[in-house]
Figure 1 (spheres, rainbow, N blue to C red):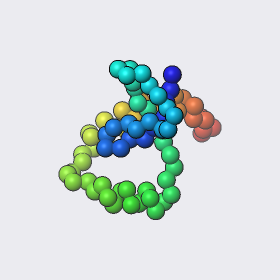
Figure 2: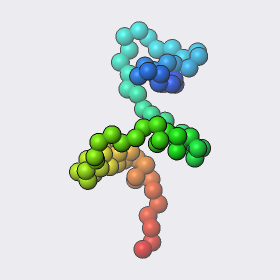
Figure 3: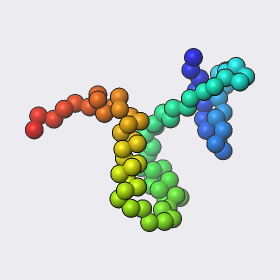
Length: 81
């Protein structure tokens, strides 16, 4: 069973007509949507980095993202180098 919605204030608001039973356990998956360049730049400027970020933190974040998106990584075409 799947249902779609939007996050507002860290709460998922289901789309009109979508229903889930009370007490249902859920797992939320973010669906990536391409943003227009202006919106992407605005989001970056609205969320500045407030503390130094080291290479270790970047590597941990990158590893977590690769593990989370393993199916995409496997689907990428291989280069002929």
